[in-house]
Structure formats: structure tokens, C-alpha cells
Length: 422
Image 1 (cartoon, helix red, strand yellow):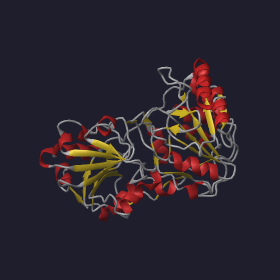
Image 2 (cartoon, rainbow, N blue to C red; image 1 turned 120 degrees about the horizontal axis):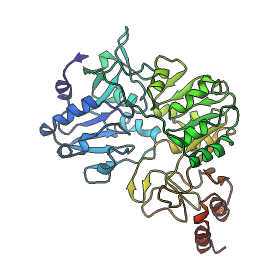
Image 3 (spheres, rainbow, N blue to C red; image 1 turned 60 degrees about the vertical axis):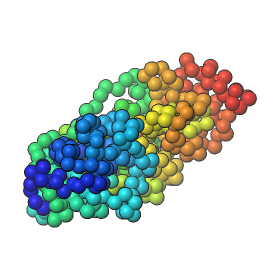
Image 4 (spheres, rainbow, N blue to C red; image 1 turned 135 degrees about the horizontal axis):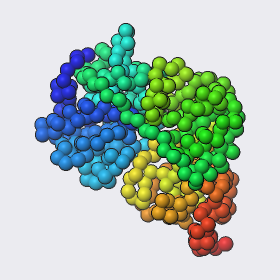
């Protein structure tokens, strides 16, 4: 490993290269900015990543003339680019992105990552974003790193030795944080409904946001809960402190919190730093349905943009506009449904911020089906919970209308009659 300037480090990248960027809280923006500074000397550089934080300058003028975004999960900073001529999106399960690298379907020329300073043995930590970063650095022809003392040293598989880093720069900047926001009355009601489905000894999967946090705030009287998830945030910390989350009934890594990335406050990053309770693994492990299902009572809580009256879930597009990505939703919905006593749950407000019903007669034209109706079990809104498993199409429509917003129920009933003639 050579410690060099940002300009020298990014000089490894040539025209026509495919460049991987580590994402989420670990997004290496100092190196990304340095790469963008070289835009006049580059052309046709492909950027591949999942959600990143920061400006994503490579999607903006004048840099976008030299770079093209190929996203595996779309965040707000690249959404406009992905839905334009300068970017695109790959529909893929989070668990399978690693196959694009390992099977040489999308070989990586250069991986850009952010790591902790090396320990006395020369090993650096990938911090709180191991996900698809580990297979990316294992298969990339070259690796560039920004070494940052603010990066937590996490336990698990997210390590890289200095001999495997070609060029590195040194930075001293806090990694990206995501602070908790107040929970609304609607979110609180959804949280209460969903918490009522969770059994003692369950293994939880949930993401970031107010609805997962609302669920977690209602679990203080639960016992022996475990965590095997794609990601987690601050909401789990009070439950760990109170002894609610112990992981003692988990089959896979009993007693450990298993995740592939984490995003939250500095308190969260301090908690995971050098903490053997938390194991960071790659997404090919955390999101492997065969592994997920081995845990008891897997309770997977996911969100949706809209659900049609037959139970089809759209969670990654708004009509034909790519909004986010397939991600790990299907990995965990299927894993939960196959787990002994498992419960796959979709939780969402009944209407959008503009008052549009999220329970709809049909998905919008061009919308993607993220989770098929055959995979859907529980659906929760602020008006209650229904279980669609085993219900026929007409029964599903009736059940979903019962938890739709009252302002939309009459129209949904008319739509149901028009479709099913009953």
C-alpha cells in the first residue's frame, strides 16, 4: 500500500474502466471528488454501486460527460441520472449482486472504499458497509482506499489487508450519519399493530425509517429477540440495553446481531466499534434465504410504495420511474415465510403524503412488481393488519379494503366489483 495524494490515487482509473464505490455511511467522497476532478482526462467510465451518500458529482454537469451511473440500488442523489440518458438501473436482489462480480458478469477494474487505519497486523476494517463491498474488493483489479480514524472497526468478515490496497489517502472526517426523526401518530399506530405480531424469541429483520423505529419502541416487554438483518439503525439500541434483544434463540450465530451494513447516529457507530456482539457479513450471507430460514420465527418488516388489490407489491418504482431498488425485500420476505413460525410483513401508511391511496386496484402503468402476490402474507396500515396467505383474489381485495383509508374504501369497492363482478 502506498499513501499518496488524492490526485495520484485516482490516476489508477482510466477511460473505459468500471469503478465500484462503497456506499451508505461509508461513501468515500474525498476520493469520489478527486475522481470527478479528473473528468476532462476521462471518458466512458462506468460507476457501479448501491445507495451512496453525498453529492454524486459524477451524475452532474460537467462531470456526467465522462461518467455513466449503473446503479444496483437507487438513492436520491442519483435518481435523476438513473431516469435519464446518463444512467441506468440493474434489477437484482441484494443477495445476488456479488455474483455479478464473482462470475465476471460485471468485472470491476477499480474499487474505491473507505477503511479504518490498519491494526498492528496490517488489517483495515470496512466499517459499517460490508454488504457488496467485500466481494467488490476481492474481485477488483485495483483497490483505492481513504483511511479514516472515524471509521468503526467492526467484527465479522469486513476486513482488508494493507497489501491488498494499491493506493491510499488519509482523511479525518466523520462518516455519514442519519439522525432519528420524530414518529408521527400514523407511524406510531402502525408500529403498535406490527409489534402485536412479534413473538418472544423472534428473529427480526427491519430497515431504517420511522415505521421500523415505531415497531421497536413497542417491543420493550418482549423477550429473547434476535437480529438477523440486511441493515439496522439506532432503534435497536434501547432494546439491547434493556436486555430485550439477546439473540439466545437464534440458530445462526446465536447471541450475535448479524447484518451487512448499518446507518445511524454517531452513538450507533460508537456501539458497533470493536463490539464482538455485532457481526458484519456480506449481503450474499445475510440475505441468503437458506440461511435466514434457519432462524426461528423470522419476522421481516418491509415497506411498499403501493399494493394492488390482489397483493402485488411495488416497492421500487413510481410508475415507470425508478425510485429505489429491489434490494433485499424478497430475500427476507421469502426467508421469513419459510422460517418455522416466521412472519413476512409489509407495513405502510394507507395514503401518501398527498392523500393518494397506497392500496390500489391496479399498480401504476410501468410499475415493477417487487414482491409477487404469491409471496405476500401480512399487510399493515394504521387501520389494522390482514393476512393474505391462502386467500383467493376476491378475499384479498376485501381484506385490503378493510385496512385502506376510509376516504378511498368506497371507490376501491367499486373497482373490485368492476374487476371481479362480485
